[in-house]
Image 1 (cartoon, rainbow, N blue to C red):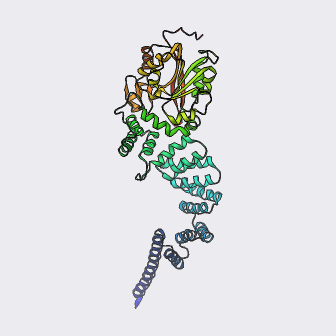
Image 2 (tube, rainbow, N blue to C red):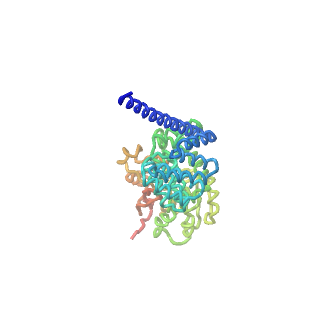
Length: 472
């Protein structure tokens, strides 16, 4: 045969061995791919058979061992599954996803401390996947480590602001800590993830408003109004967010429906959630300006549930509460301080009560009036000589109009919240036109909304034809 013939036979033999090895490898890879596809499609028995065939051909196949471990866990054989995953990790611990998978299994078995360790190892290898941070957050939360859990969820959202699981988990975590305003931000973000078919356009509009998405809020309120053409709340909020057909004051139908709906939870939301200090502000506005004896006829206008009644009672010979909402008045009846409660529109009631009151208090009431002239003129007519008007307003700065998306009308604007804000100079102009002189003017924080302080003014004014007060 000769030397060259022998060399050629050797080459053919080596080529045959390499080809055989490649065919075996291709067969193993194809088997694994087929088993993995069956696993992903939920055909567990077929996947089980496939993974085992792969390992029979190639016992060192790490991916097959790892995925077989996951599959056995899913089939209720978690102990065997975990052993296989640990064997795969012992052979190759370079894949972060394998630690993450084991962490998920341990979480499902309520072994949260061990799960935390696995997620930490995954993140040491690869800190980029938002889902790893979300999974760590869940395990930390279940391990009674809420601060670390919050940080983990925030890390997930820093990497992917639209990560739905982390958003939803963070909202729930913050809510469980009574951090309701912060929780509402993430709850609203989660609510705005599609699909939208089964979601309320009202709540979608509120969620958009909460997140500052005012144009989108208007779109949802428009859809809400299309579904309920007679809904006064939908119409008012659409006007507030679209700045179209803005009324001079909130319609009675809006006020009645809104506050009737809110009556049962009003005090909790206003005082606890919104950090409302109306009674304290009321005391500040009248202290030193009225006789410290139960000698006055007092009107608590827009009295709501009666939060200010205990402040007014020591000064009152006769205390009247007026509100449009029957639901609010029902709650106000629980206060023994009122001598009379009346369901009426405020301007109309004042205009039919000439020279009756020594003090009129309007706390968080003027925010539902845009044009103040009719209300202030009616209040002036309802005050007895030397009578006082004390109230709070939200302040609007017209120079911020371009950035706020609000358009003003004669010194006031209807904000996307559905409340009116007033410019300081417009307020002074209206008071003067109605015949009032300001005797006390205080910058105040009215409440908090979405964790931000709402800035306003507290005003005490006296009819100009009355005897002036000394504020010294």
